[in-house]
Length: 417
Image (cartoon, rainbow, N blue to C red; front, side):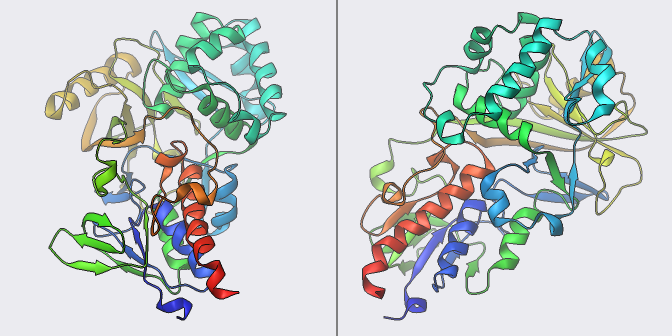
């Protein structure tokens, strides 16, 4: 049989599924993607509302991600880069800290910020050096502990952990106790140190859009929800049965495959709320952190501090809530507006949109950087992709998609020698 006649289906048009399709195309195959929603991107999507670009959940691309460097054309994404630091709002006063070795404009504010001790700031430099010299494979082979115990063992003061590390990495890990694996902390910290945090000028959905545009021989069937997957067959929710020579599952597999029913992934959730304001409280391209243990708000950011494709005319404010403490709907909006006024002095602000994202980041242990193609193989014809196979990052999603595609290719290689 000719390569293009093989029926290779990919369930999910998120980043992992799109990378799997890219790899299969490069080897001469014509995969078919089944996507439940009306567009590609999975958890990486952007809406245009009231003339503003709203990412579905505040997200960034770390430009040092090796897989992103391999598969994305950064130049055509028109990446808008953050400064390497943060504005910390402590007792209503703003303290700007950052890496002055990468941006000299941050040197004086960092030196004189009332965040951490002089010893803490020296330990940051020591941590930078340690992780710069530590390979990714070494990071993911190091014994795991919680990020909190890692930072404590490293000697950081309680104030430094509470004022900077908890709000900053809590916003990334979507949990406010820093229980996340130290492997993930070292990986993310290293990526921040070696590149920039950035957002495409058109929003984060420009990433999957670019991947879709690069596909030449892949069919994407949108609004096509899968009910179950078995050997050589896919059942859609509308009752249609599809024959499949190979199937790559690039979404949460436990609900689709019978023998995985008891292996559902636990997920961290989050809320992102968007508001329109008259002006910005943070003048630089920095995220704003709130180190208040009783607050709902974890961080704020003004997407309009970066260049965007569209503009609503005023300032757009993004607010991330990691733990909503059971407060939802209109009450959450009202409570967040109250905190914006109380802690940041932001008033008035006009509510635009609230995204509650129940499936935002997989809660994983025994994190891996990559997985051999053979280990993506669940059965003779079913392969698993998605960041749930490795760690919760865009880089992991790409690597898992790549590896699953190579798993299929290894199965087929004997037929095309």
